[in-house]
Length: 249
Image (cartoon, rainbow, N blue to C red; front, side, top):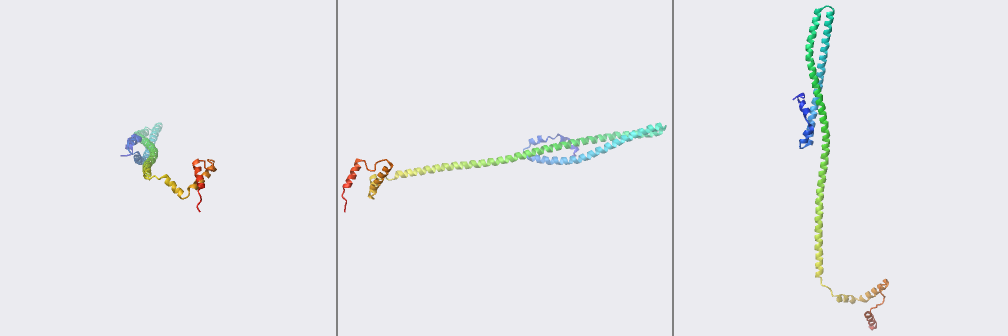
């Protein structure tokens, strides 16, 4: 199919409407841009030829009109000179040129119309390509943002898994602590309670009871909590009894 025969299809094509219907606009845009670039290159080449043809046919039509006018002027001059035969020759030539001029004019007008169509097609292709390039940049930008968002979503999913693992570890830790507390409590219940008197006897057996009491009394006196000397009557009596015990030699 020639470029000119494709004129109506190219002019009627709504690129944006076509792109809105496809599932992968980015891929379709690349394909369409390649096709339009091919069409534009062909249009430019054909346009140059059509414009040259327009120039040629117009030049021939103009030259025909000049020759027609020239022969008409010569016919007038021949009549002025009184030579009708010469005038008839010029008039015949003028009529012949006029017949040719009709065809030349039709060719020039057709070439002009072709040149107009080629120019319109060229301009539309340029607009479509510019629009597609603009949309291509937008789509690529959107795809980049989409990919970044997908990475963020994946990272968020991984973070959610990590958070879930931390919560699970917290539950395990709480369960382990509870078991440890239970074990310690059970161990405390299983211990045999010591007799207080036995424990104190062990203390005094080592001679630490009197010294401990003296130190405790001195500390209380220092802190102003109690006098350094015992005030309890029973304790005082015990001190008196101890003082009267004879010392063994």
